[in-house]
Image (cartoon, rainbow, N blue to C red; front, top):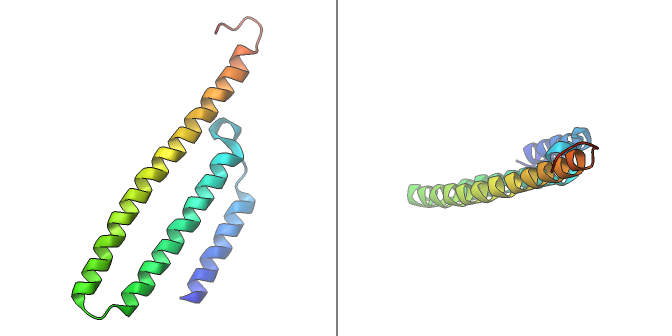
Length: 107
């Protein structure tokens, strides 16, 4: 498990170094949020896997799986909402600054 966790953490660090900020989509703020959510999601999945390995019976496995799925669905909903708001704000800000500041552009 630790080898897999280490490999995924290395991949996430590689991803962070290689992921440029895209100004039209929130730049580094969006990139940082995506990476942060990825790290949290991976950590949650590893915790779930460790809990599964320690489960004593099928009922406990079912309970753990149900809780994990509910938690992940809630987290995914919050993450999508947050990332969408960040991207929309960035596009709105870029549009205001880029279009409104040009001569002859109408606001």
